Image 1: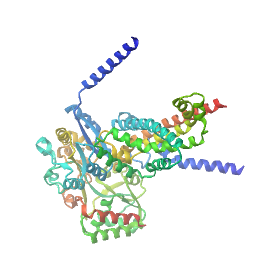
Image 2 (image 1 turned 60 degrees about the vertical axis):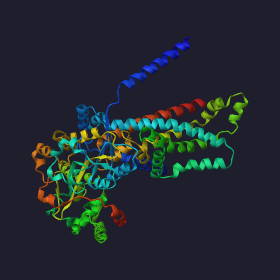
Image 3 (image 1 turned 30 degrees about the vertical axis):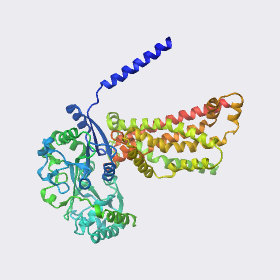
Image 4 (image 1 turned 120 degrees about the horizontal axis):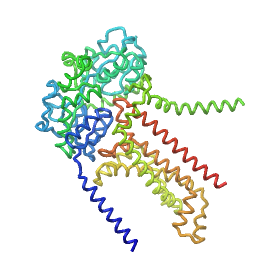
Length: 347
Length: 261
């Protein structure tokens, strides 16, 4: 009899617990996928407070990883942050869906010059999040001449003081620009010429580094290095001896934007999120934490003067005209891979 | 005498070489600036940040949950498999079982990851915690088998028979005779499974779904922007935790030895 009582009470407790847990109704959620360390988390909490939508936030390291994940399917994401050339690839391969801009009224907050970009005409698929340029970071105490051209990285005078970036497109792009070619050339002859120049440069290069290039330059282990504009702002903050220059041959301008993948399960939530991120007061919080440049005009106006007027973070239109956005290399990708292997394996 | 001091110096050097990166890691967890370029000042802010950093704490709890569940399941499966392989008659089955066991060990992580993705898509599974757990159990179990088999070989082959002769049921013989004999192997296997699970990146990255990321994925995703020193603070805690764990395990091991003698 006692045993029966125990069984009955246990099952009653179990049933009531089950009922209670089902009572806490499924909260609306969206799944967001972004680069690592690329958002101000307060922003996510604010979003949940204002809309009641929970955010499942995941991070990844580079565009190639996210491309594989989008292609393989399997996990559904509602908003994904990816870079320009990957967006182009995703549009061509039908991995993302167009945004319904009627649900995203904050579209007008985006700077008009960033509203119709070559990798996504009329921003049908993407909403820009952060942008920047690519250039030479140099130590003013170790480099006594003005830095105006990519040639300086090939200058024998700076032997073992030069750091190159361990990033295929950026480094090959630098060599192409120096030779006067486009960063997006498909001409194999031009690509091989760029490769030869980089191999010729190898003996005077101190090292090919990844993200540790920032620490090395701050610690003054080298005089010249390739960095992105956002990182340059942070590095100059850490070490005032540093400065950033965009050579006259031109450079790369890059965009990281928000897109909605095909596997989306909560499209309205996703569009609310994108709209939220385009708000100036939210954009400014992200800029504050990340330190890169924002495409939201009103947010730029809210920034302190030395950042707003900085030619590094917000270069003049003149400079911006001389920049190129990366295009999807698709058919010549194997050529890029081959010459990159040849560059990195040469001594 | 010279030889002894030379030996000691050499040992110290080896340990320095092994631990130097970890020591630097711990020192830089107190660094004022986010950069690893220079040590600018002493601060505890990264430790404070750690406890309010939702993302890192979630990744940590995911890693631990996955590791513990994987260890329990993989150790159980692996031990039973090892016993099965050991007691099976010498022949094609035994050889094939051993060879199949080696496959996940020899295969590169990425190959295992891609094949698991194909399998899960074929089965129509939703990627998430369950798929990650399945993947981890899959690649951890062979290591447990490898750890337990040698202990079984060392065991007196007639021990189980003798126990059953004396009236023990097979399950009793297993629990009270065989398992205690091979316990060191099981513990080694469990520790191996735990370490591999915590450490894994490639398989976890490809077979996980939204909302589930472990520490390895989180840390790797910081590759583009630089590692946040909050990770240094977390690593320091984990090191202390594992150090204490190892001390405890050693203590227990030594106590058992003392009891025998």
